[in-house]
Length: 123
Image (cartoon, rainbow, N blue to C red; front, side, top):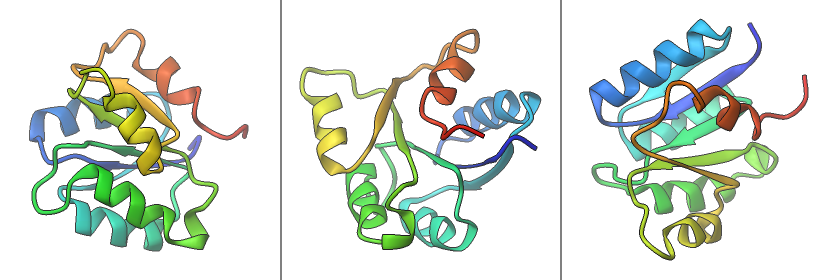
């Protein structure tokens, strides 16, 4: 395995596609379907990268990112917002919340791995 990626995504089809692409490229994928579970899983699993949907039930992705950044064990873990929020200011809002990157949905299967791997620490 190349590394472990936590995907925090509530949409079943988006999660399926993301998992399929990542696993086909040699990554271990762990998944959470809501923000609170994602925060807990990040602390437990210590992934190499977190892919974070912004539109989550209960705790939105901005709140999740802020919570993850509050955990000193996850300080160096890249968090990439993967979201359909593509209005002016949305990228900046994600970065201000603690995300280190931003990928727009719908994801493009042909470019998705290159976009993800930009944010992974060197092996």
